[in-house]
Length: 403
Image 1 (cartoon, rainbow, N blue to C red):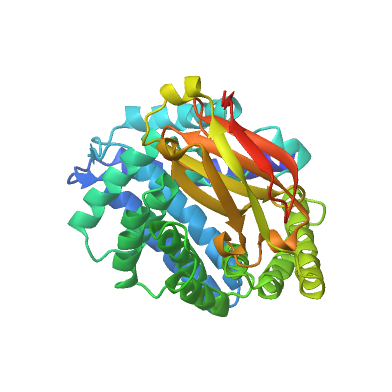
Image 2 (cartoon, rainbow, N blue to C red):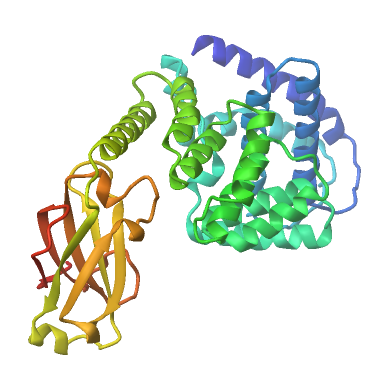
């Protein structure tokens, strides 16, 4: 704390020595854009980062982290109104006022709004600006960034920040479009390709195959330790049913995480589940499972009358133990009930996760008023637990209101 105070005091004195002579001289200046100043500072910071990377003062991973923090800072700054700044005419009164009250005011703001306690325990308080923006604030930022790229359409860095803001808002096609504009003016880095892959997959309904995988390969070639790229690359392999391929990047990612952290524990659990699935797949090859569940689904006349005949009904099976991902699913309507159904391996959503890889499942039938497969308040559903794979006499009744 004492060392910090001394350093802060020295910096304050130096600042005043630089500022006061200018203030004591009368000088009028042209109006300038506040956002223009922000972008200028932003570009200078990026140039310094580039120089540090070229001179070997930082590595690629540190470069990308610092770059993201700078971009987040720009997002925060452009959210403010773009007013004009005009210097006040210098006077001795102004100079004296600043000399006396600037240090006191800065100290007051720090102890009121800053993190003075962190000076005592040595913890560094860091936060990415975007993580603390509300949806409304992000939308305002997007509007400001769109105005900025309209005025400077060749500003690749601003296009990149706009793309990431769209990504956070879940506006995936717009995010992809902004990334592609940025690519025209930048030499993309590892994080750029990882984020573009994410946006591209989500814009395609969450499908990671094809272009998203190609982009992830580029990201990992540029930085083998890019955590987001490693996670998504493993996810893409998992979705494709290649469990062994999924484990390679996920194990590498686990090795990069801080031991005993929540992220490391979650990643470790995912790896263990995939390893268990591989054992199940191997056991299935040795002792084939029928990979099929049959039964009937019905709904009471009273509840049926409360639903539109076109209301979608989802029928799916999930493993009793392990990842809660549908092993097989089908879709019908309320008008078709009662119905005799069959779920089998041909209905698997992920090739490596099929009915034939488990011994028993949980059957669920849900009438979705919104037409969405995710349960929502007001939906009606029925569930059967402990259903043996290969069984046929299963009576599934829709009789419960989703709270």
